[in-house]
Image: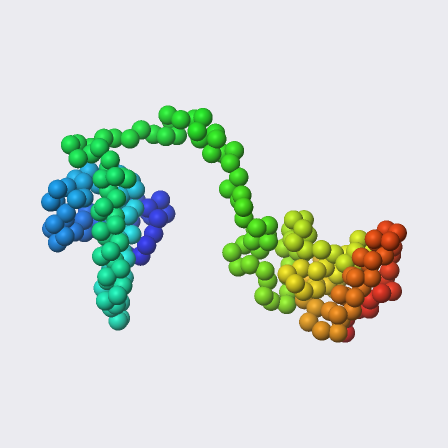
Length: 225
């Protein structure tokens, strides 16, 4: 069985996974003497966080021991993580349960104010705009970029047109891009001489803008060949 979110499983898959996990934890209790001093609380099955931890430990161990070339180092890391989980049960997941399970309430039902506070938070705080624009893959490493991606980059200030009068040339991710035709993809400028001309044009337009405001200078560049 592969690592899968419980909520992504079918009913039959959840039943199978739950049966397998219970059997494995029973083996774990005996093999690692976890019943001694209640190292793993008897109520582990009533703590969702512990279920998730044990589920991951079970599948990780299976991956290690069933690999084509099992790794002793990986097995050692697994045992270290097992001790970490066991050490955290009494203080983190099952605090107060040594003399009997203490059920927790439903946060969503009991604390609507807290739920509202979480809803107002910004989940993208302190993430660089460029990362948000391009996603986990970062800036495009290809020579093409679709129109929507470039528009998003421009909207957050990560891409900058050469000038309002020359919007088909844009500086983005440390290189120049140009739009050959309206509605088409942006193409990376790969010719060094043309990129240099765009750099020079940008400097001239910047200087002109600082002196008397930007003027229309379509003659300062030529189309790439």
